[in-house]
Image 1 (cartoon, rainbow, N blue to C red):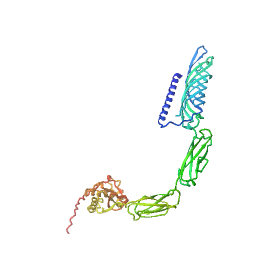
Image 2 (cartoon, rainbow, N blue to C red; image 1 turned 180 degrees about the vertical axis):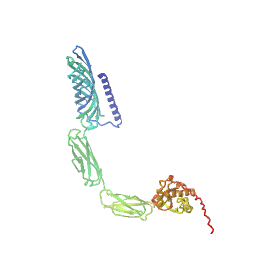
Image 3 (cartoon, one colour; image 1 turned 60 degrees about the vertical axis):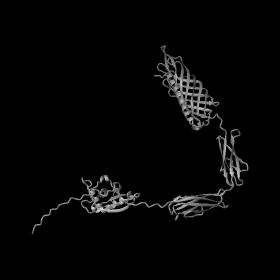
Image 4 (cartoon, one colour; image 1 turned 45 degrees about the vertical axis):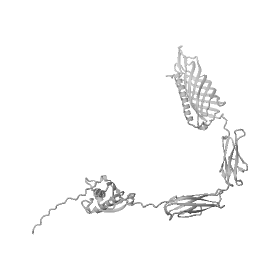
Length: 562
């Protein structure tokens, strides 16, 4: 089954246009987002292209048959091929090109071409390069083959090519590699296979070719930009005797050449033969000075440049001082480290002294210690004084804040305890003997509306063992500690009217038949004050009623009379 070459040609051209327009629009979006035009990119002298190529030939070969008839067969598209070319440019736009393309055996044919001719390009500063070329040369064409009726061996013939494409410079290797977005060509082949039956005939082929790949760029037609030179002094303002470093920065140097540097200055001694030089200011009077630098990699225009750097020599100045404290906020009685930083512009020796608005301070070097013992809460101002050997002085201040003493944190209050040892039949019932204790608990809770009450139930080891033995029975014994705590809370809520949300139920490890009661003021931490208790899940422990046991009537047998 053969392809339709004209349809293939149309699809190739349509795809080429779409790729070109897409690339142009993408770059247009990118360039529009830039505030300024991009820098000029190198324009290569030689372009080497390698890539993939698709060929869609259109042509019919009429092959004579042994019986005197003619067998007509058409070429089919070749989906896989390779292409390579070398273009040498005489200037920015015009050059010559040699190209080789190989489309091996396809469905019923194959073709190789080697051609040469002129090429025209239009490189842009944005990295997009459209081009057109016209080539002439030879084709090594084989097919179409439809055995046993026809078979056409590879034969040389003339070939012509005209087309163009679009390259996009990639940022790699300093823009010396490009992506050939597409190369679309029209090709004409003519091959005479001879008069032989089953093997002869003539081919006049119109073909469309679409290629893509990478372009390797060598050389540069555009001359390099001129050498530029900038220099600066560091520091720009000094006192007599201070050193100055002059640094030159040269751009657009040719890395293949060795640059030379020299320095000079009027009334200034400059030392150095590299991009860095030094100035001795020991003998200089106060004023402004200029140093000139020169860099050269040749005598032609654009291969050398000069620069200047300015600096000032100042009059001597008095010292300066600043101070800092660590820490800056302390509690009464704490000590503070005071650090003074004195600077003499002429590097004169300095001496230090200190004073404070409160507390006591000691120290003679650049650090001192401030004691806040006896100082009231508030701010202490520390003054650091510095003097040089010329009698010039300076002062600086810093401050320390003394916190007011913090009030003591509230603590959990231990209230009374109630005992559950009296009622042997109901060992978890809150009996009347506990009333006095719980009245006191309720009174404390009412006096402190923002406090909560914690009741901690306890049990003996024997009770714990008895409850464990009956755990799997239908009616197991209760958790005595939890039940006592829940019953106590129930009494405080129902009998004394304490809000249930203010009462927390826990179990302890005292090993006694008691409930311990605590008052926890707002801000107190019960777990820290009374460690070792566990919260009770009240959903699994229900309060038991306090009603008294029913009275039992005992019948005694009358004594027999003697």
